[in-house]
Each structure stands twice: as C-alpha cells, then as structure tokens.
Image 1 (cartoon, rainbow, N blue to C red):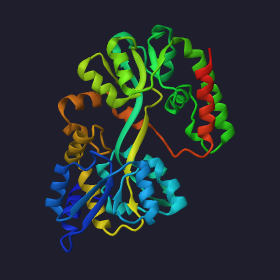
Image 2: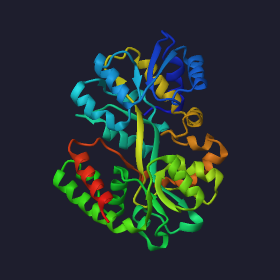
Image 3: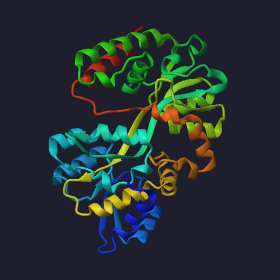
Image 4: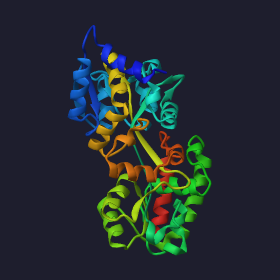
Length: 350
C-alpha cells in the first residue's frame, strides 16, 4: 500500500520522463473540467474525456478488443463477465494504487466482485445506493424494507415493482439472495418467499411508483410517508422538507459502484494510475461529488463536501451503514426470468 505522500510523488513524478495523453472513457460529471485542469497542471499529462454509459463502454471496448482508451469506468457488475467472455480488460497492479485513499469495505467488495481467476480487474470510484426515503415525523418507525408493510403506515407507502424491491425485501426477511446467485433452485425459493410477502403487503401500498418525479411529488404532498428510493433523491427532498431524508435500512442499503478498469490495449497505464490516485484524494473527490451528485469511495471525502450535503450524508451513512451496504454482483443468466415472473404475479394479485 502506498502512503498518501508517496501517492503524490507518483502523481507528480511518474511523468517526469514522458507526459502521456490519458484517454478516459467515463460518465458525465466524473471528470469535471476543474479536476482535469488540476491534474494536467500537476502531472504534465493531458486528458481526453469521452462520456459514455455501461452499454456503450462495453460495446466500444468489445469492438476494439480493449483498444482506444487507457482508463474506463463501467459499473462493477460489467467487469468479470465481459472480461471472461471477451478479454477486454487487463489486471490491476494494486502496488501502483494508494489503497489507503479508499473506504476499505468498498475497496474489498469491488476487488472481490471484479476478480477473474486470481486477478483483480477493478477498483471503486463513484457509488450510490437505494434504500428508504422516510418522512421521519410521520413514519419514524420505518427502519427496514419490510417495515413498509407495517399497519402504522398502511396506505401511505410506495415502492417500485423492480428487482431492487425483491432484493431489499429478501435481505430484510433474513435471506441472502446474492449468496444464492449460483443456485437457481435456491434463488427460486427465496423469490417465492419474497413474492408471498409482497402480496401480503399489497393492500397497504398507496401506489407502485414508476418514475422519480412521481415519487418526489407523492412524498412532498404527504400522500406517501415512506418508500424505497435512492439516496440522492432523499437528500434532495431533505433540502426542501427537513423531516424527509434517506435512511439506510437495517438490512443494508443496496449499492452500485462505478469503477476504474484498464482496457486491455491501453497505452498509458502510468497516466491511468496517476489519475486514480489523484481523484481519490479527499479534496479532489469532493470536487467530483459536487459535479456528479454522488459520493466516491474516497475515505474522508465527505469532510470536504458542502456543509449541507455533508450533514445529510453523515446522518444517512454512519460507518456501520457504509460497511453494511449490499453491493450488487453480476447477475447470472436465468435469474431475471425468475424475477420477472415474481413481479408479474405480484402486480396481478388482488
């Protein structure tokens, strides 16, 4: 593990002999202009930013066999499968990354979820979760997903008929759906138990929301006092209505992570590692949070966020809630069909 002082030396000195162009394939907001300019001034590297999404990233890298870019940022569930099938990434050299800059539980989870054989192919960058958005004055008893079934909030709760609801309810019921990913029969059994619970809870659901604007309106009006939703949505509502905020469920928020990966035919690995170590510094990570709206896996970056966002984040995510996040692994073939059947039957139930 590199120390932060050594990381700075790597960032500033690795390019003394030659400055490379870093071709970065990323999401909007993850490489804001002020961060790029700061990196270029410090290292002498230049950065060419191409904005994309998961589907386009994988398509571009498949088309070139992992060429055309030096660093990419797919979600962690888009790494092990495409690598095993198409060989579009190269392993990470962890000795070149200052791991002390990362939130440990996030780093370890992402390393585990992006391994192919004995090699690690990704490290975490920007992340977010879904969990509960609660009007704490009206529904303070809602602490977990299955609390949305409580008689105390009957007729004033909402969630989507989508897979996060199935996964969240399973964890809240003491089941582990991710551990059953490799066993279709076990997964079918878990989903059957969740199906029965959701049908039992259906009379208390105000509506199954379909879009973020719809849900925000329901919460603002008071028609809904508790729902499954994203952390950033809860914090946005909190800015307008202090009683409403995001709550990390007792069973664990459900987390996604956008990563750093090295394309197989990248030509500027030194610049790529320098960029990773640079943007994971807490002060720089806070600049990315300001641009992207989500936090990064940088340890302590919340201390440099705006005062309001820092307060909301720290209230929703004490250390134990961070360590309890259930990170989405890659979905094996066949499971989506099982889930689709469950969702259809819940929707049709009277």
